[in-house]
Amino acid sequence: MLNKGLLKWVLVGGFVSGILGAKAQDIKSLEQACERGDAKSCMELGNMYAEGKGIKQDYAKAISFYKKACALANTGGNQCKMFVKKDRKRVLSHKNHGQKSMALQRKQKHSTVSTIKEEQPSTTVLSAGLSQEGITIEKNINIKELYEKACNMGNSMACYKLGDMHYYGKDVKQDYEEALEYYQKACRMGNSLACYKLGDMHYYGLVKNRDLLAMSEFLYQRACTLGNSMACHKLGEISYYINQDLQKALENYQKACNFGDPNGCYKLATIQGEVISRENRYIKAIEFYQRACNLGNTNACIDLANIYLEGKGNQRNIPRAMDLLQKACSMDNPMACASLGNLYIEAKGDQRNYSKAVELLRKACDGGNAFACGRLGLMYVNGNGVMRDYSKAVVLLEKDCNMGNALACADLGNIYSLGLVEK
Image (cartoon, rainbow, N blue to C red; front, side, top):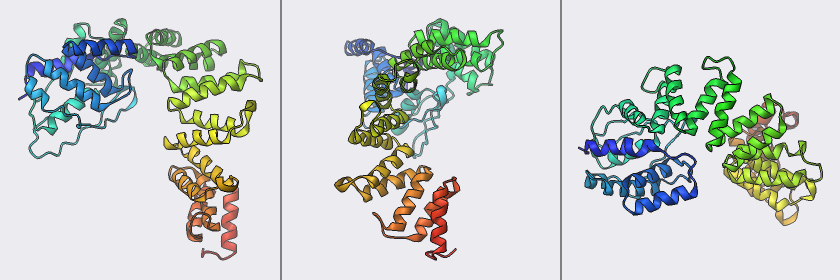
């Protein structure tokens, strides 16, 4: 039986404290404190790496810090060490802003670990490790009570998680008024996620207020000031689409981009032409498209590739465009795969590569890109990069035709009229 005191320390004293938008110096301070023997700092670092909060997600590092935290804990140290081997990784799936983790499938024969009904990824990592080692922990742990205790002691993340429980109806009855109360408490403590969620509740009319938009802007602004990139982006959307204040929108998108929001960078790039002279707009747009692309926005990679392909702003660079499309394709953007495949078909001389084109078009077609299906169908018709196969061509061209491509429909008609396949 895992020591009850240690488990409560891990659940409350450690993981619910979560660090939001941590800066490099904050991480360094925690690492130094952990090295000096501060168990709580080690646990917080574990949480940060497990959840990807302000730092790149890394389960191996997370478990490494959990191991150190457990070793430094006053009780249960030996038992705690058992579940934190570095090769113990679990892939966690998050849903919406509630960060709901999928239920862990326990198939070990002798495992008696009970499911901890909680959204927080750190808890899932903890219970997963215990399960792997066959360690029994106390059943029927009341997570809500633990959160309430921590919230009453001034832990903003615990208050925020209580808000989430009531907002989503997770293990409690869904109650927006209760959620509002906990979010307000967390927001007053400086929790940016809570302020952002409060902004959403007002923006979408889930609370009673005479001026929902003004209140939502106020709350988004508070969250943005606290470093929440989503809130800054939302302020940009309100400024751009509702208030039609382009300059203010750019300021907010810039903040979101600076906080690492790929969509904020992407939006900055797309509206550059409205405030910058036509001669210089692509220079600035390229900067933000590149930042957004580097942060994982595949549409930004594609748009930047198009600038290089079309030579906008005297920036023609085909190899660079292909690299960007490959990057987006590697992130499973079907349009990028289709565009890159088409470039390999249209390339001149040694650059033409039908085999590579087939590979890319097949991936794009499987991803739902109808154009790629049609293009691949024509390759089966002509035997380019594949063995000629009219039956496969028909199946692929039909997908493109059914999505409204007249040329694909015409190609199908030609195949049937020539008797290349039976109807």
